[in-house]
Length: 81
Ligand SMILES: [Zn+2]
Image 1 (spheres, rainbow, N blue to C red):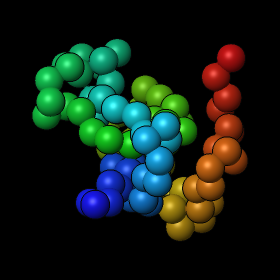
Image 2: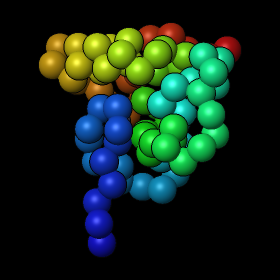
Image 3: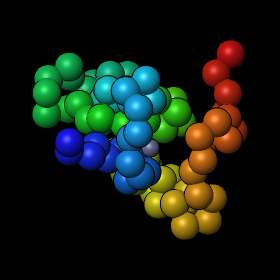
């Protein structure tokens, strides 16, 4: 079985419930629903990315990867109400 990797944090997606389809360019920034604007990510990474533009997300997750390693369930720095 092929392992899926989160497009944002680059860690393995272990279970199906943990994965989510993310818009690379958020719809709020004019991104489309077309396949080339979609990527597979963790659900929590997707929430964390929210409406960041692609380059903002890149920087954000780069910083997170090296300084604040992402752990499931410990991402709610900006919890959604
Ligand atoms: Zn992730």
